[in-house]
Image (cartoon, helix red, strand yellow):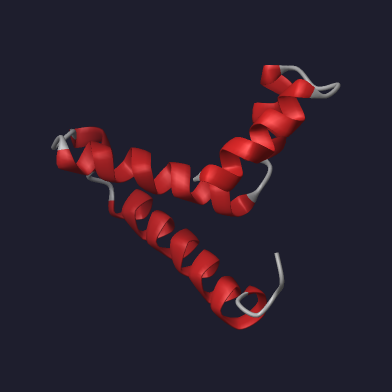
Length: 80
């Protein structure tokens, strides 16, 4: 979480506005997927009927699995 905050601060203090910095961060599939997981499972926890769709839960599961597989196979050994 700290790296995301540092990245956001670096973008926002440069030429980009806060909205532009947020838009740049949303462009990362990993960040978007984690945001999706947080929203969907918050809805499931609150027992909202809007989040009971098996398509939504399945799509969320596949997205976060893709993030995990790409990290495990391609990104784990990369230097920061």
